[in-house]
Amino acid sequence: MFMLKLTQKRQSVTRLVTPVALALALAACSAPTTGPTARHAISQPAKENSTFYLLQAETSEGNQQNDWFLLAIKALINEQQFNQADVLLQRLERRPLTTDQQIEWTLTRARFLAETGKLPQADEALTLNPNWQLSAEQRARFYRQKATIARQQSNAFAAVTNQRLAAGYLDGSEARQAWNTLWQDLQQLNQREVERIESGDDDILAGWVRLLDIARRYSRDPAQMQTALDDYLSQHPAHPANRYLPDNLADIQSLTITQPTRVGVMLPLSDKFAEQGDAIRDGFVEAMLDDKSEQKPTVFFYDTNALDMQALEQRVQDDRLDFVVGPLQKHMVAAVSEAIAGQVPLLALNQPNDDSFTPGVCYFTLSPEQEAAQAADHLYNQGYQFPMVLYPDSTFGRRMSEAFSTRWQALTDTQAEQAAFGDRSGMQARIQSIFGLDGSQRRIQQMKQLTDLPLLSQPRSRRDIDAVYMVAGAADLTLLKPFIEVAINPDVVPPKLYASSRSNNRADGMGQLGELQGIEFSDVPLLISPDSEAHQQHARRHPAQSNNTARLHALGVDAYALLTGLPQMQALPGYQVNGQTGQLSLGDNCVINRKMQWARFGKTDIEPVAPTDNGASQ
Image 1 (cartoon, one colour):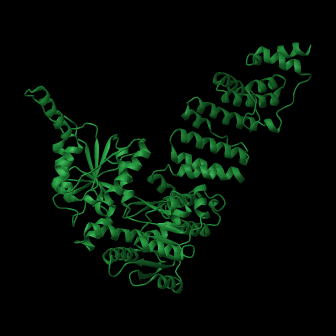
Image 2: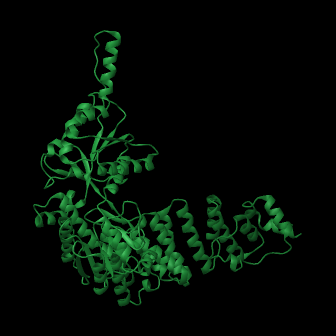
């Protein structure tokens, strides 16, 4: 009797449920169910499948049935059964609903329209009846859904304004998540939209924009960002950011960044290496004088050629140093490291050959090995597969060649070819031998002797080299380039020529550049970024300075920058400093890595090479 009555009353609904599932459910039931419990409250997401809710609706009436239908619609949308969801939405629209059910129907219908790609209609559907008395939770859901639709329409401003309203109705973890979402939305605004918020009457939203400005302005200076954040938050104690600071800003706030206040600089300022020491000192002092910050360290200079180790150690204590820069010579680095490591942080300007790094010591150098390894990266990123390294037959040349080859091996699991180019008197013959002309000529001669016939022949150069990296000064390079060009057959695509910074070693970076035209080389940004303010300022202050001295000057400038940059690198992984010797970052064993820039010799000038998306250049 019960089953007959139920079937007669619910025929139109059961078409939405499989007969088997309905039969099983009815067989298991002994009485009609009640309305949704707290677990199945209509304001909650659907936690069961649509069949479950539809079966509950079969055994309910009136408002209870409407509740189950609303949950069924949510489940159907989750299951992407949009036709069935649409049928139920239309059915409920014709039934008398409570205010809460009308609100839930409106939100669910908007979600249905958005899920089916009807975003303008979804946004239009989210219109609240002014007579509805909404709870904070319902208002939060309404504005959050408006924000979601705005994002899907790429309307950043609408997403921000609605997300801000949604967050204002939430507490606890939900509020934190909502404000973090707002923070992400803010970063999609254009400048005009930012200015619109700044000139508006929403102080909360304007405050978030101010925090965004702080985050962007001091993105490369976490210490300054900490100060600016502290200032803003203390001046605006009621702003939600005091409770719900975005995760990335909270990470910055939690950093412990200790910056030195009394710095000792150890350099050779007399006798041997005094010229190099003077250049580094001048760069350090120049950077200190250009520093506009209010708090500058007190700096002491010590001549490592005039003071023995015991005297230096005593001066460190007497002058109450909390940071040391230097020394420059390798043997002094080892001695000073052994004496003061663990007592005072040390930024050495050289590093040991045997990689015997000392805890508590960081290393910042104009490392030729770093430069050669970066050249391997550069050629790899440019797509070359068969590079050759030409180097002078010296300890320095072999070090750079090995560094390139080691890095190439790590990148490709293949060996880069290496060859010493010899002295100038035998350079042409050596290049012909390296590129295979000698071997080709010998084979031709052998064929003539074997056949005793006049042969039409031309020596053939090897075709398996697509790039050449030359560790050479400008004088050698002016010979190497034409010798290589002559050694390559006209019908063969010539290898691309690259060079180390030694090639850019004329007094003013200029000279007979036409002879080197087309060769790309790496060097410090100070020398190959002619449009930069630092380059132009350096040229005005030091018009006659050689490039070798300029590199040491840049080392001093960057050593000063690392007084603040190094503590931030240590506190914030991935933090970088755009220096005059390169883009500086912290590597293994506290070695400062320098990412150099690339340029090209033009007809009359040096031309910067623009980086490509993958970090190489073009």
